[in-house]
Amino acid sequence: MKGKTNQPLTILIDTSMAEEPEVKSLLEAGHILSYIRPIAEYTYDLILSRKAWRYDPKYVDLAIKAARKSKKEVKV
Image (cartoon, rainbow, N blue to C red; front, top):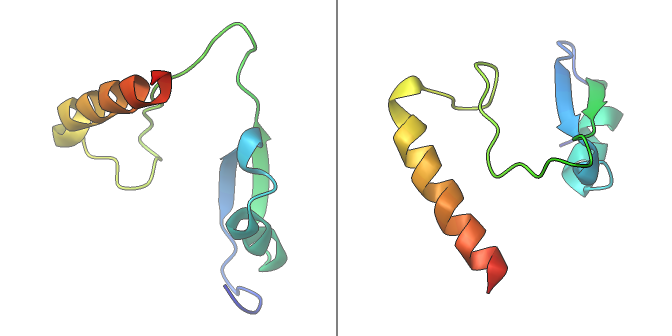
């Protein structure tokens, strides 16, 4: 991402992604970033939100299947 934005967005970012180059470039471009830190005793496999990118209720089942697949792959 290059330059400064004329239309900054407020974006919620998982703290584990704070050092990712793509996230840093959002900040440099002038977007407003807020960070969320999951509560330590919880481990999330999937987060759903109406504000999530490409969220569509008709894809919730697909998201559940993908999260289950991802969880299995991590355990290997």
